[in-house]
Image 1 (cartoon, rainbow, N blue to C red):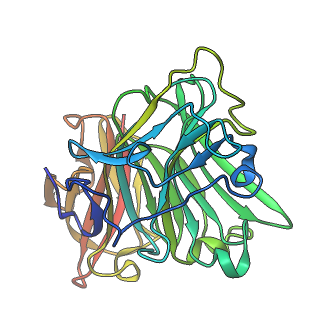
Image 2 (cartoon, rainbow, N blue to C red; image 1 turned 180 degrees about the vertical axis):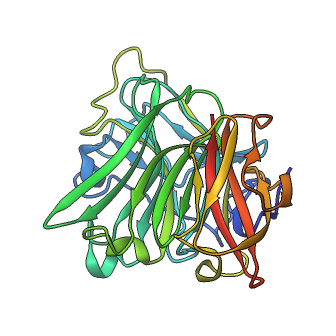
Length: 321
């Protein structure tokens, strides 16, 4: 099911990869070996060939092959939305399956659109999902400039060889990373953070399957080629009524996470609550009360909209254990 909204969020851009060819109004190719192996001593040469990037059975298919091209011993694919689509703040969701093997480095990530004027890392980088080698975790990271390159993030157990939904929620206050709806890392990018101005500018997407590089190292004899990365969809949702109108840092859920009951801590009066899951389905609603029973909910991340007595709506979130 292709959802056009959930809660106060509205779908503003997506690619379901349902056509027969890559949509060149949404994506462009990065090709070649790149300077210094795309900055990471990667071993592949990226192409725009159907043998490396194609759409098949409703999926974007990126294939890494062990074959000679120029001085590279491998070919693969890398696409980006630079110059075609960028955005600031919102929720990103992508359903992805990646290949597993030594020297393989699939990623779904974002760079600041001002990279050509301020360079990296001052443009900022948001890695929604990276996986390397045979690891049983995926990584979510943000890179920034603070007197040089800095990065912070977290990893979480994941069977990345199966389809999973990788998400971030990016607001003026935080960037949150989710695996299948469960948050595993949160970064502070508010005015209280240090040198995070990069994350208050538009970003564009990159999807690629690298071979080798400083982080994963080179492939081995056991690495399976061809190696295939599948992307089912990429979707971007943004606040329907504008972030400034519904973000209220004074509203929090207590306790968070919780397994049975929650209540709200707020300096403003509210009269009604609505709880949504990550698919935008309304799960619970009612008049504001001291505590709300959430024991029947499945484990995962939920959004709560509170209707205030002044008629406005504010949003917060919580994790159900």
